[in-house]
Image (cartoon, rainbow, N blue to C red; front, side, top):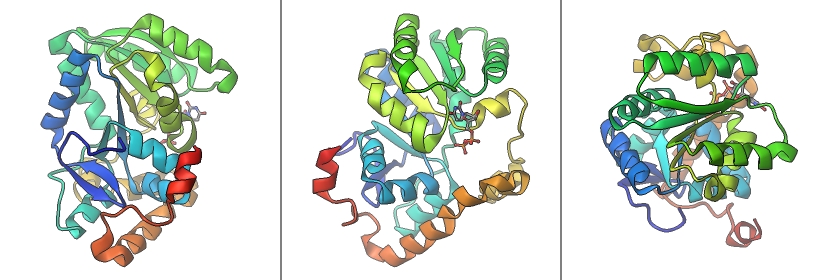
Length: 264
Ligand code: UDP
């Protein structure tokens, strides 16, 4: 979305984070489904914002998404710092379930793309059991390269789902992949959900509510999976950048230069 977003938002480094709560977000996406309007939902967190500030191509992906929701406690904090707080955190995992619930009422269908084959099969089985009125239109594991993209896109088009959940790598094969194909997929709501499939399949655990309430879900994940440390180094850098930006937090930083943006 390079023009003004069509939802209430707080800009963080020029990226419009939605100020809708969970119910309003579901309502907004239900309208997109009814209108068959291609809508890429980004569940934004500090790691993604830092990647965007360092890579103009990633900035562009985020900027052109139809909706960015505030996943990640760091974003909620930054919005408060900006004096324009989002009403609540809208976590991708929760939004997936809320969309499935809404899908039961509206008889939607969903396609699952990502994670390992046995994981995505288990997710299809569990979601079908939990939301029997949503048709699981298809699934595929997330381990494929660009040479397979055309076939994957064609299979999704053919299945014609209302919702597409993509569980791959947010910085490379997930958000940029959706951005690249969103006008070919023929799906109204497309959303990257990261590690959510692993949680739904019971392979990993979501942080206890206690951690979620304190805004420490990231800490729980770091403790359980220390290999995430590299990625999470973005968090303190994000905090510093926000503090330094001060009143200019809303502005698109000079580092994302127009000239570079045009090349992509
Ligand atoms: N994944 C995938 N293809 C890839 C790389 C990763 O399908 O090429 C899957 C991986 O199996 C896991 C998910 O993407 O299910 C990423 O989970 P992670 O916890 O790393 O993501 P986060 O929630 O931090 O975005």
